[in-house]
Image 1 (cartoon, rainbow, N blue to C red):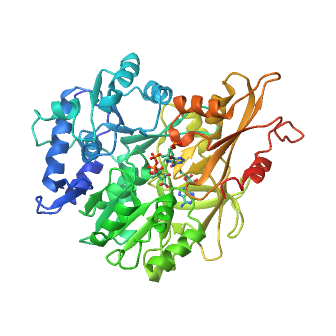
Image 2: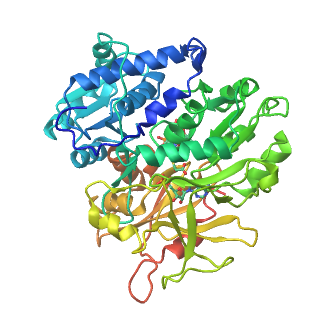
Image 3: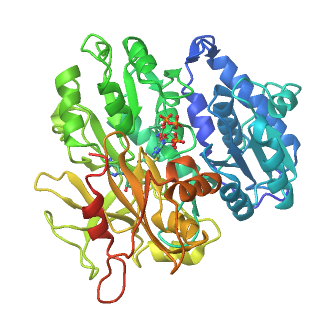
Length: 518
Ligand code: MLC
Ligand code: AMP
């Protein structure tokens, strides 16, 4: 810790890395991570690799609380960079690899990271953005162990004493868009994540010998926190996939016990004849989350594999909030519900008038607990807006607690489309479309999609006298926005349906286009 470190002194160390490290098996030569390209990393490799990267970060003399922004392809070295950031006491800022230049410029400008790590192929444009924003250190990291980060780390000592961190100290910032305006950085602390990891270890019955199939991206809560913390805090091996491929994942299941995925992953595995009872014979638990799991998928999975998917609910701002039970004695796993609030999590349903609603009534979901984030990065007014006067966080999800105590999410008060587990904010996409020449106005609505669950359709009207071409709009958007935000269809219409106040009636558009991908 540097001399001018303003971090409050605590007697207990809450550094998340230290807790994860403490769970490593005694025999550090066992395999910790096995990749789909047949590389094996031992627990010792993870320990030494993170030490070397942590020492590199420490050698840069960064300010306390410095952000380490990372946009790299999935690799075990990228995982080590995350763990090294925790170990060195800095703040990890993961960025989706799909983000384009304009999006990255915003995140870097807003977060002012001290270090940016990008893919070697993007060094030109990323470093330009970073240096302009005042970042002094830009490293590269390829998914094939190339790049300046590992070159520089290679000459560092392979031992490192973890920096002490208080429960309230920042560990990560996750950008999540708002219904209006730009993305907000949700500030998560060591305490938020450690408390959640410990609760889930217990609640999901992690056992000695568990093996996790890790096939999610590592720049969002699900793959980065829930999956990785879950395995590491149990000292469990991970079978690591750079990219989700249903056939390869199914082929790995006989050597695994736990799988976590967004609903699209389950839909894609169900389309494979290789998914049989035999293929899942060693599995203990299938977890789904990040987007609603259709009852149809839940039932089909049960019929085909004999396993009941455990659906849970969470957010970037809160990590995990609710979960269906793992143990039969705690109840059945019920499709169409997200289960019970996790131990330590308070959850209430609140009406538009601020009244707390009784069981069975639908309203806004509000939550409280040690897992709830500290606030939005440098946006105290947004933070204040999202918390009630008595300290509950407004999730923006709409739901109810049913007569058996299970939470059901029935909608969202936030205008948000969740596509294949990624969030798409209509306001952001509409903003880009509205800037295009000849466009008068647009509305992006979410409609059902058999693969991604939900996708965006852009309904656009032209300025008087202008002619619009849907393909040109799509092509232009592709150069500006992450690929999953691109509307799967653009339709040009003469006018948009409006209510008497002149507001576009998105519900009518959703109804009109709901069969597009049926
Ligand atoms: C890819 N594409 C998508 C998409 N992913 N379109 C809409 N929604 C998505 N999610 C499009 C690309 O734009 C591209 O279009 C085409 O599909 C192929 O791209 P790809 O990269 O090859 O796709 P693929 O590898 O098949 O990716 C699909 C996927 C991926 C489902 C594996 O989206 C994924 O990993 N999703 C998981 C997201 C996740 O981890 N979410 C957790 C958030 S945490 P084109 O036109 O260019 O060909 C959170 C909190 C919580 O929400 O509770 O967990
Ligand atoms: P993110 O901002 O990416 O963290 O997304 C969080 C949002 O994903 C939540 O607010 C919910 O709307 C949604 N979500 C997460 N898990 C589930 C689930 N199991 N069912 C329905 N929606 C979910």
